[in-house]
Length: 450
Image 1 (cartoon, rainbow, N blue to C red):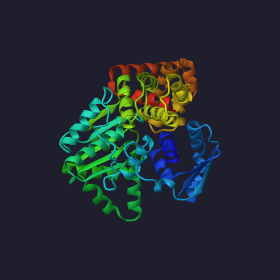
Image 2 (image 1 turned 30 degrees about the vertical axis):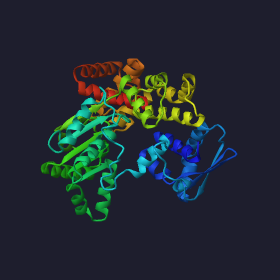
Image 3 (image 1 turned 90 degrees about the vertical axis):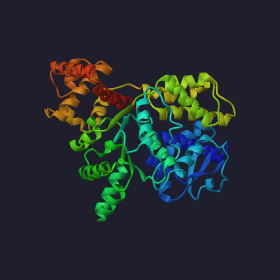
Image 4 (image 1 turned 60 degrees about the horizontal axis):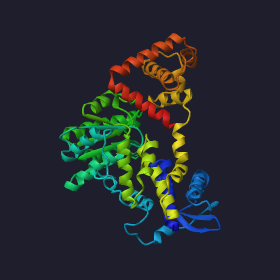
């Protein structure tokens, strides 16, 4: 394995453990300069990156390198342009990590912000996402005419970003004249703040209100941002009246987004709402086989089946497990057997099964409804506090079988009858309301990811 392949393998795994923004900020323009006597010398573009990688990500980088090559004992950082820059472009046989890295940074269109790797052709469809896929496909064929707005929601790592960007890329194939813009809600908020500060609000409005297809990712982060919601509301109305297509993604349905203006919530609910849930075993196998094909490697059925059976909740984790197996295969020049595979993935597979505690349940509920944990424990009778409190009580009972007296004590010394009432109330609602059950399941996803 060359230094370049080694570093790209590290990048592929590191990316799974940090946010996209941090990955791009701190790992762009880095590379391995040398490998000698168990020491890796990594080039970085500036002193700021050197300090940040050394202090913040050194343990992660070293552990990943050591897992790939046990002879690596130390990592040092030097300020210099990376050796990767002078490396000739590889043919189709380049490593899977290199392909991913190039797609991340070289195939994102500066005008639309769309990443060229997100296509319908490489989006695996299964029972868990077929409605969202069908709606997305229909929108790509007739933007602004059907399902407007299109609102897709689901847990982390299930393919929402892939699907909403695939719509934009599909439209571009048929008509490059369409003005398309993909943006995260955090970026949208940042742009509004900058426009206000620089007295450029009119320019901001002109930029967004001239768009044919607006795609906003992670729209739940508009929660609580009044000025951003105000501008988004007017932008939404303007685009909608012009027949422009609006596509949104979130980790929860509109009604579960706390601190969202009712007029915006009603706009979201006025279009098509589709969810993406957990992939079933057959779909996970299909994803693994497709990704293996993209990486130019053929793994035995028993290896793929082991991964698919044990990594169930998150497609990113599924791909991360596959990356780890392929990295080992590249390093040793042979396909690992089942026992080796189990050893390589033991940390990844064991970690999701960690113990669920009352604290994690309360934290997940508070985060989901954008309230403070102490508010859940308070005596407040506000509707926006009471309902999440009842849900937290219900989940304590359902997920870890807490006794009713324990639940009552946990929430400020309440009587056990209060806990019984809360649990029964939420249980009845989940039985008669599929939308509410989906909301509860989204919170469960958060609990098991903490």
